Every structure is written in structure tokens, then in C-alpha cells.
Length: 406
Length: 164
Image 1 (cartoon, rainbow over the protein chains, first blue to last red):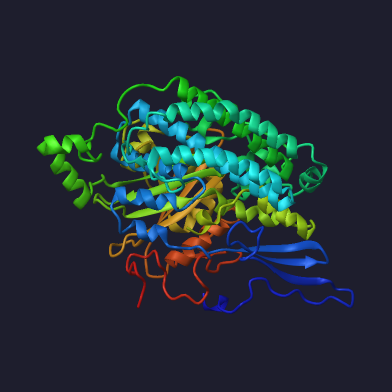
Image 2: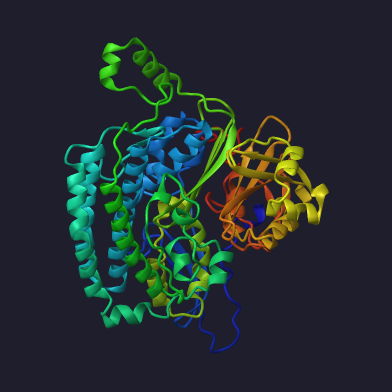
């Protein structure tokens, strides 16, 4: 290991002659188009990318280590902060994993609400992607449009959980509280108008010749490369691999919903753009089905030793008070074993691997985040293209540095 | 299937037609040290020296997508480290886990980057945070921590607040 200390990330290219144009260029970590603190070390020949090396770790906070010192229920707020643009997807993945360790049955209403919120989160995340991606290309207006719609989603989240971004609304065994009275009406109002808003973005971008020229044929990733390099989600489907965990390995009741999984075969930035636009329309359909068929019933599992009791019950029932005290001070023991729970997050296949040793704290928690693997494909997509295309490609793969570095 | 099978014999008896089990037995039954089927997940424990060929074997059997590799530190018990490889089959729509047990303070295992290039970053992460080496890895250097960092933070004998 000592031999890597002080060694440059990319060795300087050997000079080949008088006309040699190769140089090493550093992009980021402080760069407006690097979506956070991504640092790319690029070897260029004139304007052409020869090699590219992503250097990460600037946001590493050791969340996996922190989790080992917390009770199971205390990890939920930490998961929000991994991928801060889609907190509910992280909550969902973690809660599903622990529930499988505990063999808990989740009531149907909680499952449907979780699906509804996971899809709203997908819209939220895709809206940020669309706005910032278009902004990187130079179309600044779209950013203002998408943030207008995102603001409404965040207001819905705020009404639901009291928080706009770090919602922590999911609990092991269900959800933290009943949604407010106007929640369903607000979601209905939002998705009634949202398809028109997608048309609006499409009108601004799809026919725009600059946007088209910057994306079409740029950053091509073949289906074989996508699988070999671990690329998942919309990026993989843009390369023609037809696989979506929501449909193929359903969780949380997704098998009860009808939706299409869009596929494109070109594998370029344009394909990824089109796929995400269609995905937003499909998410709207899932939310509509969830609203129409929302079952009645409780939103938490019947497990008094795991789920915190109702405040009203605590004032009248001795057992509820004892359970509350025990859960908060001692946590709850989880049977020994290991599970890996995968879900389809807005960015691709997310997986939480939890190892329990039978105590109230997780022995090991590992997060498999889609952006981390997607970053490995960046060099393949950028090689041989102009340096300016790197910005378009980084925008199109929709990475979040919080979940890469963790 | 919802039942739990905790021994290799039970898995071989109840799941003889499982594509991954079948492929492993056809290739080298001795390399399969243990197996279990728990909470709907099949775990195959592979001999430490055979992981690269085992990965290639399950890949040929239809488990085409490498999803994740990570380690668990069972300090102070022995063997100390466990590597968990998660592999998805897009054909069977199913996931399996390959497990490797490693002993010693600075263990090392063959890299599977020649089978799946996507293991590159994941093996670097395990190397960085657990100090497990991967032979044949194209660029084995720290990924999260700075190059001159002392120690491996996710080991159980590493304090949560770090060394002071």
C-alpha cells in the first residue's frame, strides 16, 4: 500500500515527439458541472479525451461505521443523508431489509403509501437531474421550471413529515404517522397537472437543436459494457438492457401496479434523457393507481416491541408506556442472519446488506449505491470524445456524490 | 420458497436443480465448502483460493450481473473476515451470494475484475476500509480515505472516532 503514497493518480504521458499535445487536466472537485465534489483527472490530446480517472472520497463520512454504533431504528435518519436527493428510496430500502430480518408483515396501506412516496421521490430526483443536466448544456430556463414542480413535491413532503428533504418518514414496521388530511388531495392535484409540465420540458428541450447536438451520439455505452461495468437503472435501460427491479424482482407490493419499463437501444446521452422523461410519465401512472386503490387500515405492523406506540395509548395503557421506554432506551433485538435487499432507486439498483448478530445494533451495514458503479463507466463513455462532452456525459448519468462517497 | 436450509447437505437435497448449485457441483464439488438458504437468499461458501473461477462458473450459469462485494469483520473470532459477493441473474430474476472466509490480519484473495470489471471500485473499497488485498487487481489503491491514511476504518478494532 505504501507504494501508492505520493504516486500521481494518472502518470504523466511520456513525450512522443515535437508535436505531442498530451496533457493532464484536473476537473473538480470545485467545478460547476461536477455535481458536488467529483474530481476527474483527464488526459487530453488537444481537445480529445485519452484517459479519464474519477477520484472520489471527498464526501466520505463513514456512515457504514456510524451505523454499527446505533440502534436499528436510529439508522433511518442516516439513510436520508446518503442520497440526499431521494431520501425516501433509501429509507424504503433500509426498512425493507430490517423487516426481512425480523420477518415482519407490513400492512397493505403502509406498502401502498410507500410505493406512492417512492415514486414521488423518483419524480423529485428526476426533476433535479433534468434541471441540472439542461443547465450544464446551457439551457438555463428548464432549471427554473423543474424546480417549480419540485417545490410542490417538497411542500407535500413537508406536510407529511415536517421536513422538506431529510424526511425520515419511514419506520421499521411501517410509517411514522398518518398522512395529513389534505395529503391525498394535494398529490392528486399535483399529478393531474404534472404530465402537462413534462410536455413543457419536452417542448423546451426535445426540439432544441443545440440540446440535440450536444447529446445525440455522445457518451455511447453498449449493453455489454453496461453489464460488465455495473451500470444500472435508466442508464442501463438506455443501453438496451431490459431489467427493472420493480417489475422483475418486485418488493413492497410493486407487483400489483401496472407500468411500462422504457427501453432505448442507442446507449447515448439522448437515450438516457428520453428514458427518464418516459419514466416520469410512468411514475405518474403508478401514483394514480396508488391513489385510486389506496387500502384502508393501519400504517404500522402489529409488533408492539418494534413499532413505537401511539402517543394516546401511552397515556392510558401501561404496556404501551413500557414498550416505548424499552424501544427508546434499549432498542429491539434482531435475529441473527444476513439479508441483501435490492430496490430500484431513481438512479438504479440500490442494495442494502445488513448483517445481524442478534443484538439491538446492526453488526454490519453496507450500502450498494448505483452511482458508485456508474462512475466506473465514465471513462468508457468519454474516451475519444471532446472534453466538452465530458460535461454532457456526467450530467446524463445522474450521479449524486453523497451516495458515491457515503 | 420460504423454508430455511442451514446446511450444505440440506441445500443439496432440496435445491439440486438450482442453476448456481448445479454449476458449482458440475465444476468442482470440493470448492463448495458450505451452503445455506435463509430468508429467501442462497449463500454459497467458496474455498478462498477458488473465488475467481467460481465467479466465472456462476456467470456462465446465467448469473450475469455482479452487483456488490463487501466484507464483514468477525473480530476477534476466527476466521476473521467474510467477503460477500452479490450476483444477480437477469434471466432467472434472482440473486445469489458467494461467501469467502479469510483468516489472518492482512489476508488476500484473488480479484474477480477479470470476470466482471465492475468489481474494480468495490474491491478497492474493501481494500481501503478492511485491508484485504486482491491479487491481480489492475489498480489497487485507497478509494475513500487519503493515500497516507493509517489503519482500515471498518475493522472492528478501529475505534469509531478514529485513533487520537
